[in-house]
Amino acid sequence: MLEDHKRTGAYFQAVMSNRRQFLNKVVLDVGTGSGILSIFAAKAGAKKVYAVEATDMAQHARKLVAHNKLENVIEVIQGTIETIDLPEKVDIIISEWMGYFLLRESMLDSVLVARDKFLKPGGALYPSHANMSEQC
Figure (cartoon, rainbow, N blue to C red):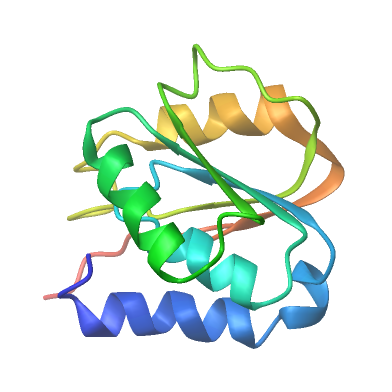
């Protein structure tokens, strides 16, 4: 994702254009990978970000978080969203779940589990919706 400037830039714009929604909020980043979306959320003013990553990429995310001096805001948790626990409910869930053709990475199920398990009533999903259409 880091090398996909259009996709990463779109997430950056979505977060930074909605700073008021992130300010002093608790955020969950599902499938954080490098932690870039967590970093965006923290820079937008989130008070706490839980960055959940199932793979050993979590170790690299911790390094990037520390390099950006955000370890007081971002907590990287290695594990699956289905098996981890958080100490609190979250205001926002952010995730780059769609991959190729929206469903390629099979992360949508995990985002829905996170929503049902951790999102406060009235909370927000980033992204909140997607469309598939056929173009000839």
